[in-house]
Image 1 (cartoon, rainbow, N blue to C red):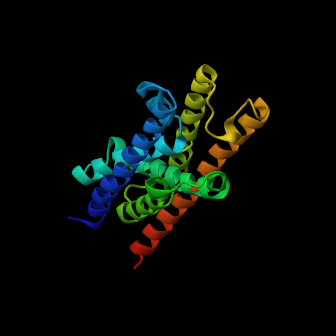
Image 2 (cartoon, rainbow, N blue to C red):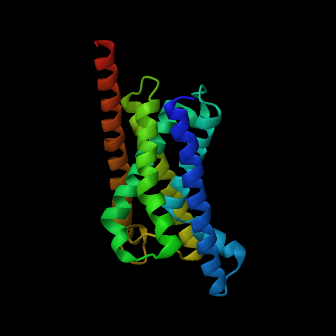
Length: 210
């Protein structure tokens, strides 16, 4: 078993367990306030953090089960997308959102896993796993994830009135500001992914000349 496969298997189990555990707590809390099971699940799945961690778990699980397959979820550009997505989850949460609540007990444990451990684990996996000749077009491809979330989040928000993040909430900010915020996030994704592509190419060049 390679190091990348080991990290993938351990990460899939660890992050997957925290995602399910946090979902159970969230749904139970919603039902405790009189909501239905379906409504609780629906609310839980509105968060970029949750969806990105689910994405990460799927990528890691497939890499653990099929370590030699670099297609589909394990295509180099998709793994790059997952890497920059979960790194941004950690960065945005710790810089903008962590101060807005104070989880305790199991919630705190899950919070640390989903926002801190998951980015570190996947970054380790990506660094060890690197494969394929990534280009700037692959960096641009990573912006598809926040774009897809923007469309998803704003569509469902228009239906149920729930916007989980203040910087995407048109009831608190103007639509112009919301769109600028999301465009900025997509641009940041591209720049961050381009940095990873540049690192990957530099490491490949150094290895070739070693």
